[in-house]
Length: 457
Image: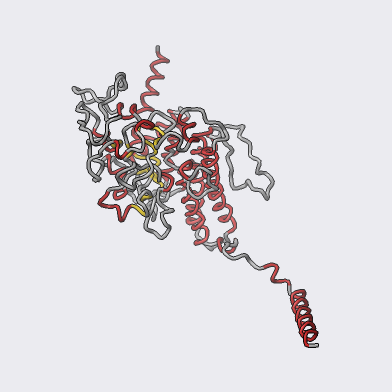
């Protein structure tokens, strides 16, 4: 009898609960926790937050990812640029990151996961830039000023162009995805049958026209950054006459977002996290550590590129090549580079020589920038002491005797410019330096004069 009473009470309770829920279906339409609704974003703080999120993808970290790791997505393109060229070897040892070995020896195919990671990171960046534009269009009039809206739009359009530019460098005619393309609109199957450069140019022209010269935050794009990327797009296409007036204007009048006139700085300062965002920095991907992100805002995608000894003690990738080092040879009389004979022989090095064995560095004439570009035995490795050679190399047999140095932080600043084990630091990646602008201007002049001379002949 007691059991029956309990069962009856439970049944009545269940009926009451069911009737209550049946009459009130609001529990079915609760907003999910941890997600932002459109109402949260259609204001100044919300759309700016989206814009910062688009900037954050410039380093390549935060997209869908690749099975090989974030290093395939690095904005420095050390995998697709340095390793794929004659500048660097993959590094580490044979059999480590075999997919990257295929890129190094030109046998990679379309299924290589390094390509998948890079593609995903770039188009996630495109999506974030387009999300900014979509939300911006839904903000009610008066919530933000017209000028604020214009700057947000121009920065997002600039970022969209930069992400597509990076994709075009690898795959040439890629799908150009704008904010009008979406799954909801049913137009998401975007072809890549048309040249992509005119669309990149159009976005960069819009940004160059509408962005202001100065910004309250140094990492944001200004009008001169947009003009510089436009000039770079022209140079990629050999449109030298279009690039000429743009480059002249940048050289004469260009300033960084802080309003500082573009100029050359000491070469090593371009790669020192303590002197970043200098007058030579036209546009840089900002890196940050010790900011409660656990290193996620540092240059995470370059974390493998440290020697087996010295800073971080891991992991031996991206080792400079013999040919890169040889290119720093100079004529002992003129001091000029050896244009024809620089690679006829290797400069003296410690290949296959143990660190415990004696060694004297090369005594011939070299461009002094070599030791701010490459770590070599017998020469100071920033302030980490004399580079000892083989004991700092994972495998000389696999990748030679040299170490990268441009992305390394100084030992004296380790606590403020690195995080964790030390292989994530706050060294910006400068996408365009003022030195690049000057080099393009020189190339443009030579190309134009050379073509004109050929026509005359």
